[in-house]
Amino acid sequence: MTVMYQDDLKTVLYTEAEIAARVAELGARISRDYEGKSIALVGVLNGAVVFLADLMRAITVPVHVDMVAISSYGSYSSTSGVARIMKDLDNSVESQHVLIVEDIVDTGLTLNYLVDYMRARNPASVKVAAMLSKPSQHRVKVQVDYLGFEVPDEFVVGYGLDFAQRYRNLPCIAVLKPEIYAGPDTPPTL
Ligand code: 5GP
Image 1 (cartoon, helix red, strand yellow):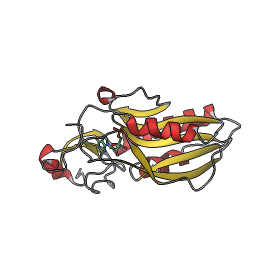
Image 2 (cartoon, rainbow, N blue to C red):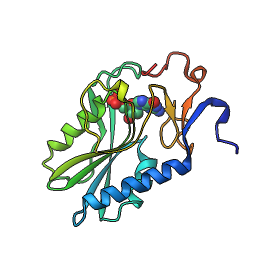
Image 3 (tube, rainbow, N blue to C red):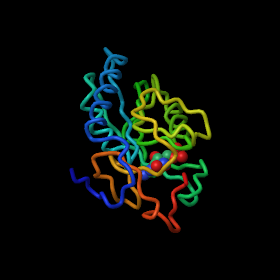
């Protein structure tokens, strides 16, 4: 089978079918946990859009969808943890059950900031769904309530995750060949 961007990839970690099965499981768990309630899904642009699109269709309780965009100050290669909201919520989450939908938890600093930001808006609850997590890289304690997969400390792309805006449409999750990102934009994890 030919994989899109094949020459740029070191290894495929999770295939399209494996991702679909995992997202279905997460959706079923979320639907059980929130039975009788509705959920305010808050997706984090741009990386989480693919996961969000699949996850919301695997959830059988009513959902609202909102999106935020967040950026860290400083260069990409030194995640400082000082984040700012580039695009805020369009709707109030007061008294809502917020489920933050994130692509990948690396240091955890972005998620930490976002959880605090949501909690300050008086929701009924705040939980987190993340497609991927790199446990070896966590610098702060973050609670991911619904996790897709753990990944090693390597730079991954696909299923919404980019490098320099490329590879988001790759249907699987793969490790990028180091020579692709060698240079000034070297990712933080390596
Ligand atoms: P954190 O604040 O947890 O260090 O950073 C999380 C963000 O860093 C993610 O939302 C994602 O945008 C980016 N990131 C961290 N690791 C990777 C990776 O392996 N691949 C890609 N494409 N982005 C990553």
